[in-house]
Image 1 (cartoon, rainbow, N blue to C red):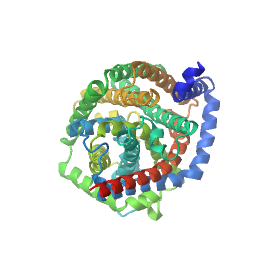
Image 2: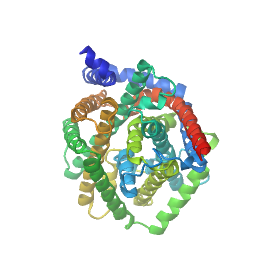
Image 3: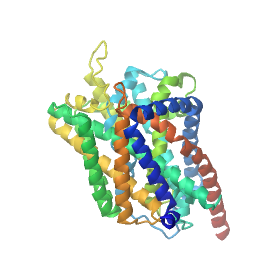
Image 4: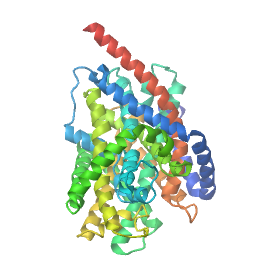
Length: 501
């Protein structure tokens, strides 16, 4: 046992911590939630501004790299070529990076921002609603992913280090306890973010089934769905990246596009395009004050805590596994192409998605003098909205299927990356590791669902918001060191290429 721990300390440490936390959530649910609630409030008050500044720095840094000579550098050796087509590449990174979240918030968030404008910039409530939604789903989220992908991709594909988060730090130190701690932290951060998405997604699926069938499926249904999705993800990840993950990701994108077109063709095309471009323009020119919550762009501490801080914590929690996955599928691409692809294309796709659904939701409210709260429930809002369109029953089934497939894709991607982290950094980790992580993630997901039942006045979303504020902070601190080391690495490689040519 001791020898096995010495060979795979990251695996044993992370699994042990996750199992203990899951048991704490399940057995001592009320006290666990009380502790998390208090601790998250303290972190929010002390470090909320830090999250905002870090997000802005990551975006500006990536823009700088892309337009500089460093942008021509390749993620890998000079002779490396991309493994996947551009369409398959974009489909995989988008499915892994966003997925079910765009269905969860498609209607609820734009309408909430329209009804409660968080900023004042002279635009209509509809444009403000879309602009702030763009801000929370846009460049900053993908900057966290892209920065991690580049920082970890360089030591992996250029210096041939093993696949692990700590590979980005070997130039700083090769002391094993430090590197083990970094890898364990990255794994825990990944698990917290992934399981948060899984808990939210399964709860939304249950809401959709209840809405479709008029049933009252409850907590037991959510648990059953979690087990089904975990089983499907296990089958997918055992098939590998080239088969299971790539094929499901591509199917997700095609089905999502079909749903988008279905809603788009029934709206006012000219109005949708106008609102898209106006909100995009406002988002770009307001990006820096938005990112700093400065002046009229400060929505207040309560709003930031419930929305922006939570989102930044969520994106940071997804950065280790999404960044590693993006690096894994981006080998052979230039930094410029990778940054543009990761930062710009999925962001614009998300913006158009929210514009189409947001515009249709705004119009469905008609001339209501007082908003009736029909889209307030984050878990059922999209299903309520679909009832305003023809073929509501069919489109609801499509959304439920999409939710399941997006969750399967996110989960199988994470299982694959976690297995790489803990199986000696192998690019094709063993089936044993993949199955072990499937079991561990399922157990922890059940623990989080119990946490969401701690009190009658909370749900899974409330528990997730508070938990991620805590668990993302250490990794956010680590990102600063990662940025410094990445800049040093890029400068050294650029200098070597300049002298060799």
